[in-house]
Image 1 (cartoon, rainbow, N blue to C red):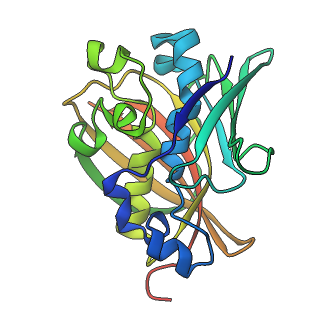
Image 2: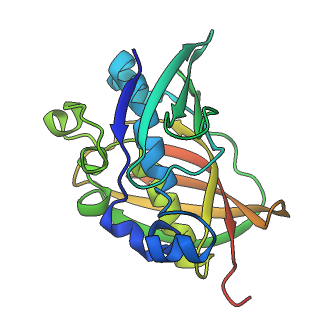
Image 3: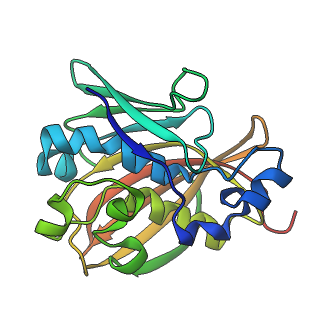
Length: 238
């Protein structure tokens, strides 16, 4: 049976106008688009329900956002198995039946990839609490109790931290998260302090300017997650 949830934007996402009704309608959409990291939070639910902390510690996957999920939509997470893990589709029954987003999850994401050449962005030090704490998923609608019980941050915090880099360094005005390849290399514990390092590794035109960053999230110099993060942006100063 598919797990389902009603999609809602979190208050902190209002800094991107596309996640407000006014900003979304100005851009030609019928209502506020739910943040990609929130949709990703929903897609991780079946992985953690099936594999628990094993997946949070060294699993991962690639999420692709294919069509908007709007505030108030009912989202069904439909699971299919693969040889290495699972595919989870986010379906909104009241809209076109094609997946709005798909997570291709693996039970073992392997070691951190080698660093690629790119333009280095300023590193950030962030405490895993408040906006980036264990309750990210609970506030979004993911009802798995493991995060609160074990003091582990939700996996959606990792791409949320990548978004934090984009907001601070790369974008001006509305922007759209399109894809992330996320690898877990350890558990993130609530209250820990992490360092977030990022490189711009690619920029190309496809329905707008797409910027790809490699993001490394470390605790005590040990990687907790590595992310290849892609978004359509309007760059600062343009």
